[in-house]
Amino acid sequence: MEADTPRIEEYLESIYKLQQVQHPVTTSRLAEHLKLSPPSVSEMMKKLYGKGLVNQIGKGVCLTEEGNSIAKKVIRRHRLSERLLTDILGYGWDEVHDEACKLEHAISPEMEARIEESLGNPETCPHGYPIPDKDGVIKKENLRPLSELKASEKATIVSVFEEDPKMLQYLSSLGMLPRATISVEEVAPFGGPLIVCVSGSRYALGREVASKIKVR
Amino acid sequence: MEADTPRIEEYLESIYKLQQVQHPVTTSRLAEHLKLSPPSVSEMMKKLYGKGLVNQIGKGVCLTEEGNSIAKKVIRRHRLSERLLTDILGYGWDEVHDEACKLEHAISPEMEARIEESLGNPETCPHGYPIPDKDGVIKKENLRPLSELKASEKATIVSVFEEDPKMLQYLSSLGMLPRATISVEEVAPFGGPLIVCVSGSRYALGREVASKIKVR
DNA sequence: ACAATTAGTTAGGTAATCCGAAACATTTAT
DNA sequence: ATAAATGTTTCGGATTACCTAACTAATTGT
Image 1 (cartoon, rainbow over the protein chains, first blue to last red):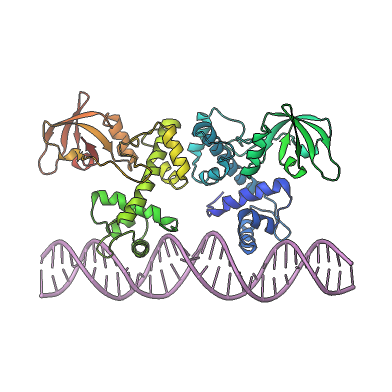
Image 2: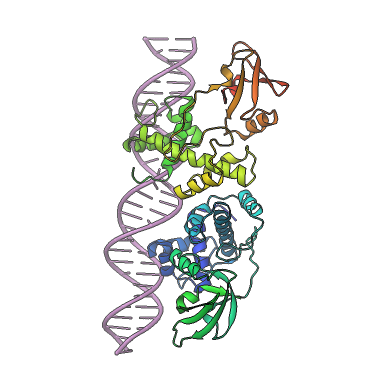
């Protein structure tokens, strides 16, 4: 609603992302993700709470309606930036995350609309995540992490976690990218790897990595 | 050479621009251009002087070699951003300056190179100013302001001052943009207007405005 | 249960960047 | 030449956002 100090968007974006994985988001995880000290984060949480952007304080935080809405607008700019970088400037999909982190804070609503239009209204970022509309609304689809598939299940990859370029490059080299068909041959017990099959080749995929791949 | 606090680039860019017009650049003009108070600027000048980016202090400042070089790298990013906005995102040339002011601080050397390549190595920004190369070097051409032309002289418009969208729109509507041919019919004495002719139409142009148009 | 570990907050401090008020310096005009 | 106007810097103060060290609270292992 009102004036943001510049960092707030960055915090909200991080909280949003961590929230996908862990609910609520703890101070220390946030500090780790933002590469800041816990006291810095703790202090900012008080500010966010004061502005009504997070709903509690102390035992981890969750975004409020408003916090969520702001976060999704930032994420919209991030994902549009990524598409600009890949589709127009020729970047590889494993190179765009960090650049987009800077760009997302330099993009006006006007520019947002123009990027969207110039790109032909893309639905997702290069990693398969949906691009929120201009009001921050995401059409929610019920996706499963690859790690939850049972043996002999077949699925289509929808998104791949973007923040680790090394992992992206690796998965990309195996052909595990959005829209690829993947089938699970075998699931090792006790959190062991999945044996998966992508376009004819068989690979062992750690459960940790598999949980970062969403399928439909 | 070393770590910049974030504002430094912005100051250097402003100093560079004002320097084109007035040598050396005074505290108050800088404050005006940056929309800051004179004390703020005065303080920063001490810092710039300490870092060897300006060559004196007190009676206005001039950029040193190094200050100039940094400024031109910022200007390169600014002008490449402007071209990205007009050529790829479909902005009008009168709309891009302010957007580019934000973008220029979010562009990595890598992205700089990719924009340049994607745009086909443009030589100038949409307003006709040259884009410095990646080392900040500008091929210098000896241009005259339109205001210095004598009656019955003919010239080609090379650049039009970018920072006043209203003026840009006005000049644009008259067809006074880079590469247009302009001839001077009459020059009123005592700093009065020039009567100029552009593609068949005759206009009276204030000396002040004419000085913001560079011709060859 | 309680010691050890882990997580979170408080306290105190630093650095960058801005401001207004007032002091100083310079220019300009009479 | 000097008073008014203009320009610049000094001073004290505010804000934001970060840090380390120390303290407190919560969890966990045995």
